[in-house]
Image (cartoon, rainbow, N blue to C red; front, side, top):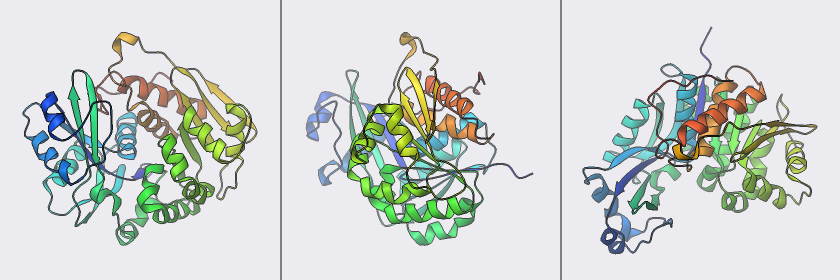
Length: 339
């Protein structure tokens, strides 16, 4: 029997992290605890960061983080987990991104375009951070390249992407989800952020009929419900979202994380509550990738079938491990199945 497969599509970025002095921030007109989308004046910054001996670089981008963590959680074999995206041509940052993604066990299906590889500078100073993302080539995935890999999409068990990817490639994403849905793939989409939910509301509505599993935290789900003009408490609006127009063979499932509060899972006529195993506060290092990691655990367990309680417990376990490490670092140990 052929191994079950996970495929992701989205915006791959190289996260480059380094401790920098305050003067470095001042030179580029940056302040801590802010995000600055890269302008011309910021472009030399990435080269400077990789020349800092203590820097680290890991794959980034929300969907790619989820896919990497799903590979770890599933302990999947070679070519069982793949990611479709776009990087720059003959670009050393592209080579770095491919190398570290492959090291995490994910097969890279990367288009190449005449744009700089997407990256995010993570500048650390006095325990605070500043982010400088450059989306670059990640926004330029071509339809022709996706068509070359359409069999990988049709034969996957799970497809995962992010609303962030609807900014540059909404029509392409809709096409991919429609094809996946018609071929019985479990289609999964994460809402990404409150701003993305509003900025790309119409694009979400266009792809939603082909989405089997919709993920978000409570703020994102509430914003989406508000945009739909739904009223009621969180479980009620989740059921209403689940009941929106749906193509394909499955009922839609809406999954809502609430930090340490219980995870909620809704179908149109049912809501399931799953308690979260709390992590000792003293062990928490970084919660930024908790949502991506939850999705990774959930879709890894989905390979074993749609037991929603088990999927949520796997998601919560994955998130509980990730938050004990910096960024979206893949743990060096195998997951301990506790669900």
